[in-house]
Image (cartoon, rainbow, N blue to C red):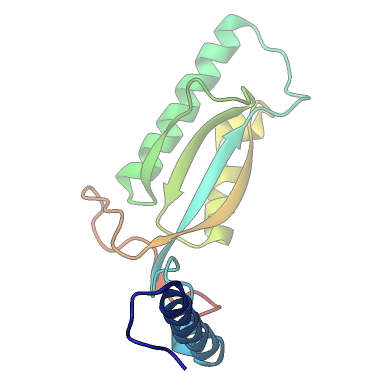
Length: 161
């Protein structure tokens, strides 16, 4: 039994009561799915298709003139995809820790269509670039593409929610 005096015994008793209250909160959270949900996981995500361009280890050696021509065709192709609204953000990497990573594009389509369009890139055809396609999940509403003619990405819930 706890007394009201400020003695050491009373302080220990108060600490026990506090621990008991804390433990009941922990036990409640363990059994309440709403309380157990990680608050760092957003309720909704916007899912974008991202293509990361990289230089393959077996890229063919080309002359400076051939490289200039290929780069011009690569940039023109990407610009044409952007003008059609298929790419909504696009650009090179600089000061990257792995120099084989060359650039990234955010596509306004699914992964299969982004791969099909990437296969047609002149630098990919020539073997100077390869690519990886992936979905990028970001908290809903955290990105905007003001140059896009319509919505970009899909709004989804996290599978664990």
